[in-house]
Image 1 (cartoon, rainbow, N blue to C red):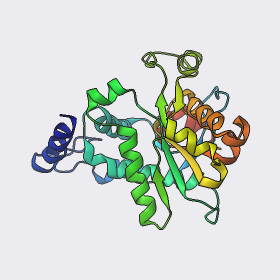
Image 2: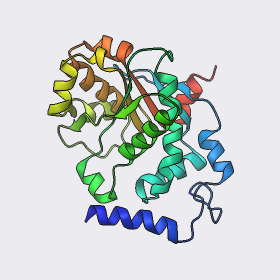
Image 3: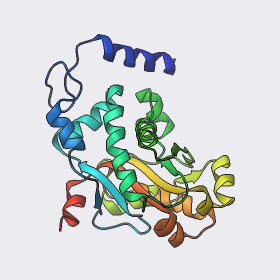
Length: 250
């Protein structure tokens, strides 16, 4: 049933009149101006305040506001799946920025932050995993070996994050993620030798989700939290809160 709904969403996007997800301009799913808001600037190192313990370095393409916010919500909540390509290109730029020197060894391993099963079922797709797959394709076209590794899963249910402050979000997410059985075996056989791990998500607000993901990868990888977060593991997101951009503007 889910596959049928996904196919209908993709087909309807081709057959029915479209409007820009960012501003509503007709006959295009993403107009030039809104595309520039998403893709027109280099990826930036961003940091929420307060910064949660264990948060790796995070790169973002654009502030989460105006057209960029509308585009992300259209893809995530309204099933505008055709936007995944543009969002993936934005994420790919952030992955490149966070991956280190071009000559560093190993493929780029994109580990998406998992959505709750109930959210995925309600939406009919996993938005972060879809954007990550588009980013990996963009990176490979540019000659960079990249693949998506969905290694993380939710270990327990978490409360709705909307309306929660930074401290409440950290408490809500503490211990909520773990690696899949296959992911745990893979990382225990030598995380540093596998490649460059990049945690990916669509949005950074307080940083609590990425910090929890970094904890799960670091501890299961057997390389130690500090080594994982600062030496092997980085993070990339499509957008970050405007305040996270302002902190590093200078």
